Length: 504
Ligand code: ADP
Image 1 (cartoon, protein in one colour):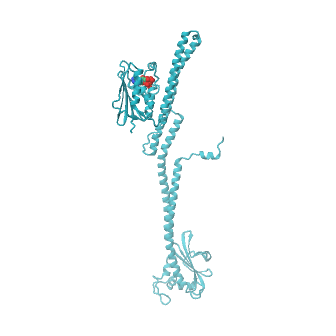
Image 2: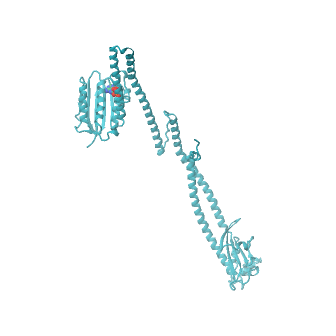
Image 3: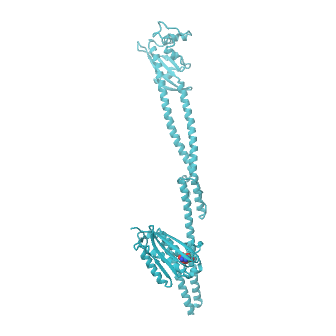
């Protein structure tokens, strides 16, 4: 089937690195933008508020003079009214002289507010008459009235040299209340323009530095997260291709969740491979164990077919031998089933309770009956009669039978088995000791493995198949118990069991 458009889209692989860095940069850029926009707007508004207020003062100063003119504003009536000193200065005379009768308030040149405004190169004053003709200006490039007529009382205008605060006021004659002209004050606000320019430049530079630094820092951080994940997926892929691969995640030297995950991951692989290996081994061992009896039965049947039908001796021998082998097979299959069941006991008997002394006495009694030539001693002096453990009693019986049976099977000259049971430190200890052939140190590690037999030929002759101890161990650990063995070749073996005591 052809992949459709959506599945193609889903399949696109985007590295965590890009997603993380993209996310971090977006968050930082957004926070930076909000933060700087707030600062910028506060500074801008505060600055403009101050500038607007000083422009309004200027408008007020000029208007208070211009309202005194009763006709249309012209050069000849505006200049004298603004200030006699101004007129003098504009005519190129010295202005330091005290003004006389023309000056309404008797101001001198130094204190004349109109002159102070006119000598300020940042303030451009233009006075128009009601027809839009310029009656006065100190602006090198005055605007046409038609252009500024629509302007609000005070507004910021963008020009090539920066922002200009333009304030406009109509002038009405004080006496006739007629419109005589317009006053326009352009405040070029150099300080404002300079500060705002520096602020903008600063914001861009710092935004760039902040984004660059956070990109570097988040890259370093995400790489340190992604590296172990990449290692894990590499190892997982390798093990997927080669299930018995010994590849593992190397020590990450980190004490965090990723470190824990890599340890758990390696542990899981070890367990999984051991389990697979065990299964393989089990299947191999079972087929090997079953092959011999099947081959024996087949051999006898062949013999019967050729000569045995008429020879009662061969017939009898072959049938006996075949029955013996089928018995072995039945026993083997039963033990294999026991082994499988032993792994699931905790689910099957969650509430079972066993009185230890009863079971021990019963098993020892049975074994004494079966092996009359053996001295089987029982020591339960340190076992209170009502001692109990959480266990299904048939299972304790089964474990003891396996151990005592082995002790008998692998005894040599001294036909004695000592069994004891006692309670100490909230545990119940059981011991089965013999004085037989013993087990070498090498074999001690392996006797609990399935199908392991120290001497294959000999134990087979004794009826062993190497499953007894592994069943005993599975059952013991299923009930949270422990099984240990100590042995010396030629002197005997001592198997110790220990189970948690069930307290009343
Ligand atoms: P088997 O059915 O062969 O006895 P087990 O699992 O019970 O299987 O025991 C595994 C092997 O451990 C035996 O084949 C035997 O070699 C050795 N073994 C077990 N118990 C004893 C013992 N008490 N003394 C010496 N060897 C023992």
